[in-house]
Amino acid sequence: MNDNMANWFAQFGGSGGDFDFNKLIAELQQAMAAMAGQGDSTGIDWSQAKATARRVTASLGSDPVPSGPERAAVAEADRLASMWLDQHIAFEALTHPAAAWSRAEWVENTMGAWRTIAEPIVTRIADALAASFGDQFNQSEELPAELGQFGAMMAPMLRTSAGAMYTAQLASAMGKISGQVVSGSEIGVQLLGTPQVVLLPTNVAEFSSGLHISDDDIRIYLAVREGARQRLFAQVGWLAPQILALLEHYAREITIDVGAITSTIEVNDLSSLTPERLAELSEQLQGRLFSPGQNDAQREILDRLETLLALVEGWVDEATATTVNTWMPHAGDALAEAIRRRRATNGPSQQLFSALVGLDLKPRRIRDAANLWAGLTRERGIAGRDGLWAHPDLMPTAADLDDPLRLLAPDDESNAGDEMDAELAKLLERAEQERRDDPGTGSE
Image 1: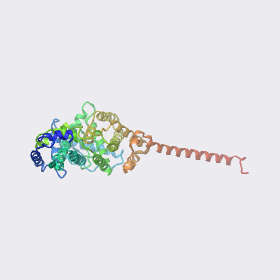
Image 2 (image 1 turned 90 degrees about the horizontal axis):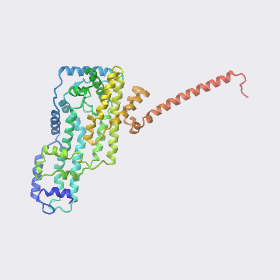
Image 3 (image 1 turned 180 degrees about the vertical axis):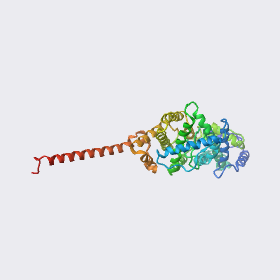
């Protein structure tokens, strides 16, 4: 038996052939009984995850329900932002009214989306841990014969425990992010069941501090950003499913470092693995749960996910810039810079994807995407730019972000070729006219 496994089992009455089998089985039965009924068919207790996120949110400070005047101000900002957007993006206006939420309302109203996004990953982590633990157990040579099926017996409890540890970690990240997001889907994925503009007045006030820009201008700017993002998700039907598919694909490649688990879970009573204890263990295992590094398949998936997320946020940046620069150029530039600084200091989106799949979403990549979309706006106009969202095969690639001329040059070369052809035709026509006008020129 490997050292990690041996040390772990030594807690239950010995090593080698000296295990206290009855004690071990009794502890296992108690632990499984304690966990019975927790969670849904996946074994994951999402109500506990929401409660954890709400507790973290409550710890961040005052979180008042938006007042009537605050709700009216958000509605007015959205009305004006929507009128502006109609002229600068190709996607239709939203049909649902804007809303103002508290942080707690954001957690409550986005929990369904979080579950859809995270459940494939949580489920795969749980399955991988149970399978890895069972494999190592079955490969051990020093087990007493009566424990030959112990790995299979442990699998349900391990599955629930692993799911609870990851979910607790994710719920904590959700709670922290709730104190930062200024709009419903600022993190770059669709979290709202209904496409609409949602602003969080408490967080908007903190974002506004020190900017020396009027509250109305800030609300309008953020409503433009969120309105553009929500129109994109509403009109581009493949976008949200594609992000989810990449996360699911990533999850299928997850493997577990069982050594990290067995060296961390030092218990002499399996029934002590309560939700609270599992939350503590998730903190201890942070950064150690997955096998060291990522395999090639996962790195390729994360590259594709980063490119897609960068294209979404880069497009929002460009659509917002072209929209607000017409009416409030000075405030628009200052607020765009504030958004860039926010990203550079580990903004909500970066925190979320780091906690979810270990993705380091680089602000530079979003700038590359915004520059590419700006070039497409100049070269092809609004309809041509937004038309690329019609199908994933039309979308710019990572190589296009590295070298925008890959995408822009063909149009440039085509235009240049058309201009050369037109000039050549003029020269030929002029030469033919001169030949006809010259009386000394004739056929022989």
